[in-house]
Image: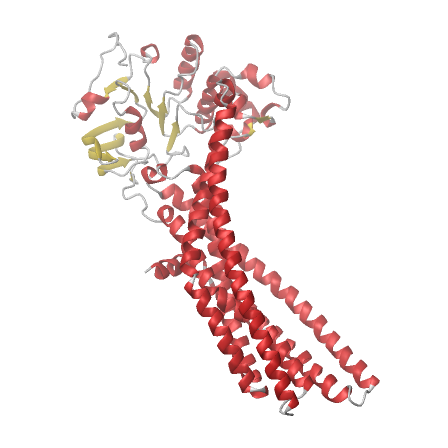
Length: 557
């Protein structure tokens, strides 16, 4: 079952171009093997025919031929390596694209159970291992099988007794390797889990660096991190010691095997059944197929390695979000948004039951309610984050070039980059002019901030150095630039002082008058009389709460 899933996953990267490159690589590697047999024949000639009667001209001629073959083989090997590298890059590119796509299609509840450090590790190291190991098998397995078959035929023809003794000794080594492969799989899995945990611990430390420094928790945090590091080293050491033990045992078996083969060879030479040159060629060929034998020996570990990595990424690449928001191709509907009889459960807890809600185009709706009543969850549900039962439909205006939806969280989503890059993030339309950006920054009270930047809009900003209010105003400015048809704001002005909040919020509403706005707030002062109020508790009871124009309102919570 696991093998089937792995094969199905790997099959996604294949197209005609990649398949042809793999076939070409296999053919070139087989050609290289054929060229490598010619020097073996020439070595036999040197020891059995040239040296006994020492002919300098023949020796120089054969040596020159060997040199030409080596140069030709090196050129083909270099060309083959280039193709193989391009295969690996293409495969990893496609699998990483699949991985990142899976993250965006994944149920957010499942992703929340996996640490961000572990997700990073799985998307990088595990995906890379699957790609290189799987494509390596596809290329090297057929090549090594052909190598082994042809080499076997040649070795049997030279001396079948020495060959079968060699194969028997190799079989013992393979059986031993197979017997310890499950143990290797277990230790390798444990080591990777701890490595991912270490990465996540470091990420958490960096994310909370300011908090740690402010609270003088440096020693505590270092002790905590070093404890995680020690755990990782413990499991890494266990795996390394196990690999060293297996390597030592297989090394003893290999040395013992070579000793027996040399003794047998000496015996048959003394009996006149093979010549010295033929035995040297035999040993040389046997050594040349050692990589193939070692490959077969390691195939168990490679397979287990692929399975380990696949088992780690499987929870992310499987189980996509079941329900997606329905986008209707009709702009004639009165409503922009319709929610009908929606039920949502998070962690086996019912959050919404038979929830219904609608929103007109260009309407502004304020969602109110006590902390923890589900306001943020409701907004994220509309944005398509959670699985649900029921119907959620959006009727976009297809004649408009405005994006469908924009969401501003209370927590900043800015990134370290230029101010321009942050403001235009996600915009794929006509490039926004500097004049328009400056105009909008002035509307959100960020003109002074802009003038203080050395390179203006092209100044790299460090998010951690921005105040909460500055982050929120940049986020609001980005929404004003793209003006989505539906804007959802979750406490998007909570970091502003009263006067700045009043100015920014008023300008935002006027500038985005063509959009529908759904916003959460605990501040009654920013709720306009014309706004429709929706109380979450009342909404969950399938009723709407509205205030008449001019009626005073007291925020809940």
